[in-house]
Length: 108
Image: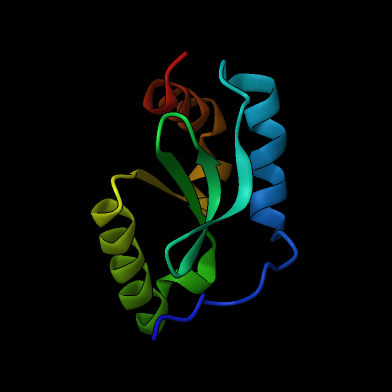
């Protein structure tokens, strides 16, 4: 039997930071946060477009998280979703680039 990964959790600092940037920089602001898909929650999901953006903080560098992320991506793709993963450290280094890339990924 499938079990949802965890109950909805409070957003991380990285997710709060990215959300503020979405509201300023992306054309399509019709997204949901912590949206359940199969057994996982997507950080940011554009439901009509079936697109997800995941923000990976430093914990995602650990082996356990890396394997979990690979499995999560596989499950989301199996359910018809497209995924863009952004490492938070890269977002901090070059926010203009990553918001532009996210905007191109999501589309108008």
